[in-house]
Amino acid sequence: MKKIAAVLLACLFFTMTASAREFEEPDVIRCTCYCIHGRTASGCDTRYGIVSGKKEWIGSVAELHQVNEDGSIGPFIGYFEFKDTGAGFDTNGDGVGDSIPNGESIDVWVDCKDEAYMWSDAFGDYVYMKIIKGKG
Picture 1 (cartoon, helix red, strand yellow):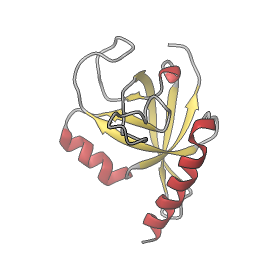
Picture 2 (cartoon, one colour):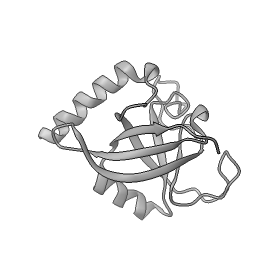
Picture 3 (cartoon, one colour):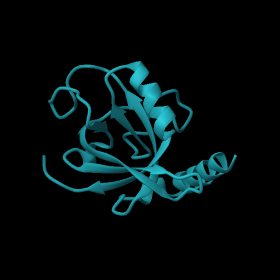
């Protein structure tokens, strides 16, 4: 119950501040997975270690941490390269995914649906993310 309350509180904070955040310091963001094999928006093949996000983030790196039950920053998950974009989930009710282009969510690439379920079981639907700016 505590974890659910912490995530709900983080979600409320997240939705109130999403458009203004630059993720220079770790902050909570919704994190889902995708397993489409092919080319990314940046032209490379999909592989583990790639994350899709806002177009402006391509070339940067996401430092991801788990969200502890109390809502604080948890253990380090890994570094992921922003090499792809996507739609994400519908935030305004028009039936079109817009959370990724708006910077309100990210998608970590995994090899298959089973790995997506394992990711969700291990880390939940939210992570702490810090963006490390770069060229690439």
